[in-house]
Length: 341
Image 1 (tube, rainbow, N blue to C red):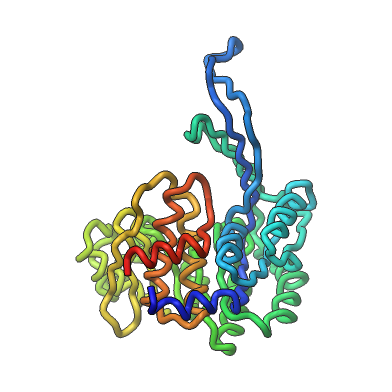
Image 2: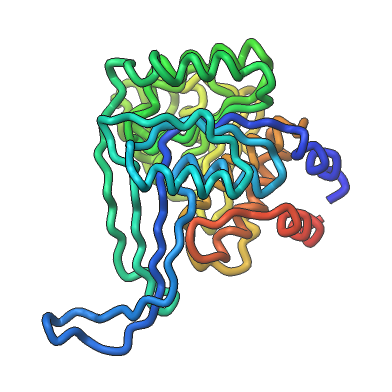
C-alpha cells in the first residue's frame, strides 16, 4: 500500500479528458410474483427506477469517484435523455461543457429490467451515425479540445463503436498528448484497430484481443510471430500478446482476462501477469471502464505502467462484486490495496 500512497494522493490533482461514445443507462428494478393473463410473460412490479452514466460517461464517473477532475467530450441527441445524462454527470461533479448535441442521432439509452437482482431483459435505443464526414468533429469537438487541452493530465478514448471515434479525432488527440508528455489510453473497438496509432496503451479484454488477432491477415500474423488467435493459456497469451504489441507499435498493451486477472505488455520488457483480486463476481458490466480509468489516472498521477495496472486490477476486483456498471471509490481502493500489501 505504501508504494501507492503518493500516487493515490495525486489523484485529486489530475485532470483527465474522456472522449468517446456517451450512453445513458436506465435501471428498472422490481419483483415478479405472477404471470400476465394477456401472454405467458412475467409481470414486473416496479419498485425503483434510476439512471446512471454509461459508456464513456461511466469512465468519467469512475474517475470522478476517485477524486480526479474530469472533462467529458461526446455527443448526445437533442432530446430529454441527453439532458438527463448531463444532469446525472453534473451531480457527480463532472464537467459537461464538451458534451454537444447532434441532430442526426438520439442519445443512446440502454434500459435494463431487473427482477430479484437478476437482469431479465435489456432494451437498447440507438441510432449509430459515423462522423465519417468529420462535420461533428471539425465544427464542435476539435475547437473545444484545442481550447481546453492546456491543463489536461491524461486522455482516455472510450470507443464503443457508436460513431464518435474516427481517425482525425484520434490523430489530433495523440499529437496533443504526445506533445504534452501525458498518457493517452484507448478502450478499443476491434474494427478501429488501425485508428489508434501512437497511443500510450490500449486495454482490450480477452475476446476483443482474440477478435483483433482474427482480423489480421495470416501473413501479417506470421510476420509478427502470432501462430494462433486463441488466448487459451497463459503461455500462449504471453507469446501472442507480445506479437500483437509489436504489430500495433504502441508503448504498451493491457489485456484484461476476467477471472484470470490481466496481462501487461510493454515494449522491450517481459510480459507481466497480474492475478485477479476479485473475491466474488456478481456483474462484469462496466469492469473495462474501471480498468481504463484507474490505469490512466494512476499513470497521470506518476505511477509506472506496472504499478498502474496493479491498481487497475484491484479496482476491477471491487466493481465486479457490485450490481450494474458501478464505480470504485477511493476508500474501497485503499482498503483493497492494504489487504494485498
